[in-house]
Length: 136
Image (cartoon, rainbow, N blue to C red):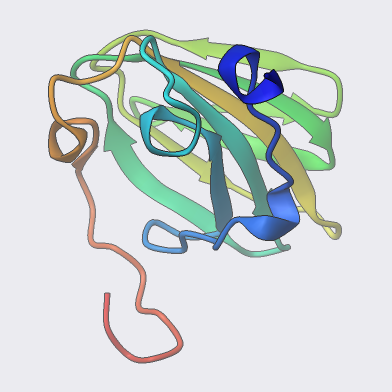
């Protein structure tokens, strides 16, 4: 009965996506929860890590910094976020997240509406980082 009304997912049970940098885990999405209006998840950035610049042509993004401090580069302009602050990014706004601090930064993110197809959700504007396996 509960499965018809809600979905509960633990971050520890979701494989991290490190494609753009950091430890990003999409928790609630069309694939995991049957969501129809957007998706949400968590991001951890170790000191020195970044999420490479990209934009969303169909979705707004909402970020909330739970712990740490980051610099968000919004169309190249730096915006410092500290724990307890939120940031709203409009559709088509380029953004990059950087952790220049000495501790892990932990964020919650939400995007909506959904892109028409998942592959249309993100547009990368800089080279992706190289993973531990040597591929990007």
